[in-house]
Every structure is written in structure tokens, then in C-alpha cells.
Image (cartoon, rainbow, N blue to C red; front, top):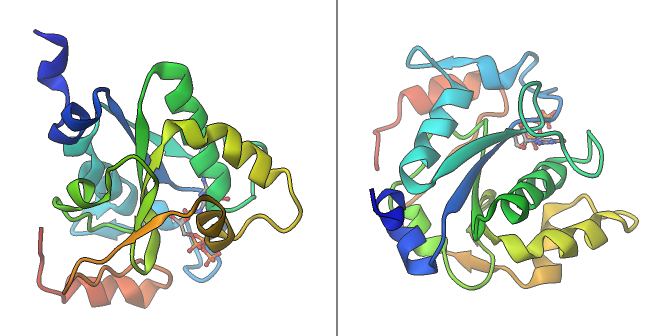
Length: 191
Ligand SMILES: Nc1nc2c(ncn2[C@@H]2O[C@H](COP(=O)(O)OP(=O)(O)OP(=O)(O)O)[C@@H](O)[C@H]2O)c(=O)[nH]1
């Protein structure tokens, strides 16, 4: 098979393979149990998140859980520690960039990667973990996480001047509490 045949459309545009990363660490204190293993439509939230990314990427990694990539530089630094693990995996394995989602986001719009992917980082308005991150940001995130009070994703977005992409009509809930699962089950599905 020619090298390019297995690349997604977005990877074609960017001349290289794209990594998908599910950010799946944290404490889930509001949920009260292992959020990633909670079921929605009979499938774990982690598997929903993985399946959302799969059509768009050459590989999906899980960050911040046993069996996945270890957060970097250390555990329990919040989602940016997971993003940093994914960025370093990308740099080390020839991926041009990373598409991220959270394990608490079972719905991933199929049109989102085309809206996000570009020369610079981008996130979906209101959902900063639904992002696109060029792999070259790895060293910048190392530097950022080495500073005081650097765990806020919004501080990181400001530092790198990330684009914020608006998709009219798209409201994507994430699962913080058990009742959020019931609410998304009642929503109409959209791609
Ligand atoms: N890799 C990694 N992912 C994280 C970390 N903290 C949170 N996340 C993920 O980021 C997403 C949003 O997490 P939050 O809802 O802000 O935090 P949480 O720890 O899951 O839940 P709360 O304790 O209720 O705030 C979820 O997909 C989490 O799994 C972390 O330290 N490392």
C-alpha cells in the first residue's frame, strides 16, 4: 500500500501522520468513580472518545491511565500533563501533530478536525480539550509546565496564541457528574 493511502484527509493536507490522544487522567471527583469506565450506550466513555478520534488519525494513545502514556513531567498536573505526554510521543514517532479529546467527551464531531487543523494550535470554542496541537509545541509545553502556576489550560492557550474555532450550533457537553450521562443520552445525535 502506498505510504499515503492510510493517512486521513487532514494528514494529507499536513504531509504527515496525525496522532490522536484521549486525555484520561484526573480524579473524577465530581463523578465519584472511574469516569472513563462509565457506560454510555453500553460502551465505556473511554472507548467512545477513542472511536471519535480513530477515523482522523494514524494512532490513538490514552494519556494518564494505567496502560497508556504517563503524564509528563509528572502525574496529577491536569490535562496539560497528558497533552505534553502526547506531544512528546508525536515528536518521537514522526507525527506532525495531535488531535485531543477528553475521556469525558463521548461525542466527537466528524467535521471538527478539518476546522481545527492548521499551522498553529486550535481549540473548539468552550471545549479547550478538543484541540489540535502541532508536535513542535512539545518543548514549549515543557517550558510552560516548568513554571509556577502553569496548570491552567487557558494560560497555555494564551501563551501560544491558540486559535479558537467557532462551530455555529455545536454544543458539546462533557461528563462531569453522573447526571450528565443521562442528559446526553436524551440529546439528539449529530456528526
Ligand atoms: N492525562 C490527564 N488527563 C487529565 C488529568 N486531569 C484531568 N484529565 C482529563 O481531562 C478531562 C477533563 O477533566 P476534569 O473534568 O477537568 O477533571 P477530572 O479530574 O476528570 O474531574 P474532577 O475531579 O471532577 O474535576 C477528562 O477527560 C480527564 O480525564 C490529568 O492530570 N492527566
